[in-house]
Each structure stands twice: as C-alpha cells, then as structure tokens.
Amino acid sequence: MTRVFRCLIAVLALFVASAAPIRAGAEGVLVFAAASLKTALDAIVARYQEEFSQDVTVSYAASSVLARQIQLGAPAELYISANQDWMDVLEHEGLLDSVSRIDLLANNLVLIGLKGGDPIEIEPTLDLQSQLDGGYLAMALVDAVPAGIYGKSALQTLGIWDTVEGQIAQADNVRAALALVATGASPLGIVYNSDATAENRVDVLGTFPQDTHSPIIYPAALMQAASADAQNFFEYLQSEASQAEFQRQGFTLPGQ
Image 1 (spheres, rainbow, N blue to C red):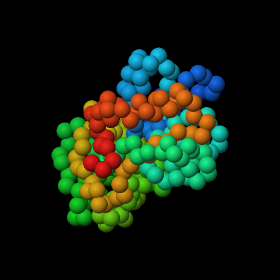
Image 2: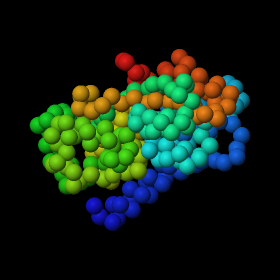
Image 3: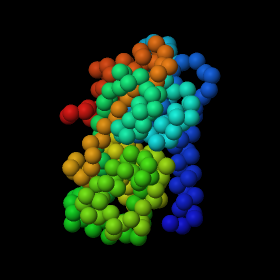
C-alpha cells in the first residue's frame, strides 16, 4: 500500500474518531460505543437529553480501542461493543457489572460501493479482485476490529481472501473504512449494514451470507462503578422507542 494511501487512511480515521473525544471530570454519563453505532446512538442520545435533561457523552472508536482504554482506567460507565470477545475480556478482568450484560443489537455484513454501483452476488465464485480493478478493498483492521474480523472470516469462508489479501486498505474502525469508499478512495468496502444506511454516498452491492461469519452481536454492559444516571440511560436504550431507532438505522435485534 502506498505511503500516500496510508496517510489518507490515518487522516480519515482521525476525523471519524475526533467526533466525540473522551472527556474527563465532566458531569453526566460517559458511554463508550463501537464506531458503527454513531448515527443511531447520536439520535437516541439527543432524544434522551431532551426528555430527561441529563447529559450523555459518547466516545466512539473501534471496540478493541475502547476496551483497552477501559482496561487502562478510562472513566466509562457503559460499554457497547461490536462483538462478544472484547466484552468477555473486560468481564474476565472484573471491570463489568456482569449482571447487567445483555445482547443489545445485531447486524449484517455488507459489501458497499459508490452510489449507483451494480449489484454483486456474494458467492464462492465471486472474482472480487477483478471487481476492485486495481483498487483497494476498504476494511476495518482485520485482526483487531470486529468489522474487520468478521469481514476476513467471511472472505476466508468463501475462499476469496487469498486473492485479495494484498489489496486490503485497513482502517482503524469501520466508519473510517466507510469513509474510504464514500470519498472514492476505495472502490469497494466491507462494513455493517447500519454503516451503509448512514452514508448516502454509498450503496449496498451485496450482503454476506450469515453462515460465512460468526453472528454479529452487540453486547452492552454497565461498568462496576456505573451511576444511577448510567443505569437509567442503559434502560432507555432497551426501550421500544430506542430499539425502533436502531432498526431504522439498519440494525436488527438479536434472534431476528
């Protein structure tokens, strides 16, 4: 991958991550949430703050990055991950209120391209390398970030990974991968369906069969020192109105 392309990925990742910096010592509830939740969760937080006059700040990043920050003492009260493994790590270390842990949401994995692109049937015979036409496939970090892990697994199951491994543009999180496609830096990308829903410059060209990767589940849990205000917001996320907003933004509910 060229140096210029690496710099572009870094700039886009910084732009996405800077949308909600971690605060220290502020009043209100601090939530750590997977980057793919941003559009839906921003809408839910705005409604919650209007209804209850309670400040909620959300820090968005890759689930792995957020988990490591919590391990290092970041003052999050609620953590929403894009996969089970990172939540398991925090639970094993005794950082969660284990009783509070739930499977909040689910998602689908999709192949995206710029608006107006032709549909692509995702199957073992897919010649993805030809579809890239010399460009790079945008993905979140394939060995650390859930969206990238799911994507790599799906491509391996289909027998495609080896043909495109050298043409992967790895971004720090799934929203940064989305931005690479939306800006035309990459012709194709693998993201969650909810990410594609949030970006009007891209289209879903194909959906990966669910049997090509592990179920995409978003667990959520309170931290050990979570406040009553954090508990209230957590309950609000599970309300019918919040669940409807998540579904409008392309998520599904576990078991559906």
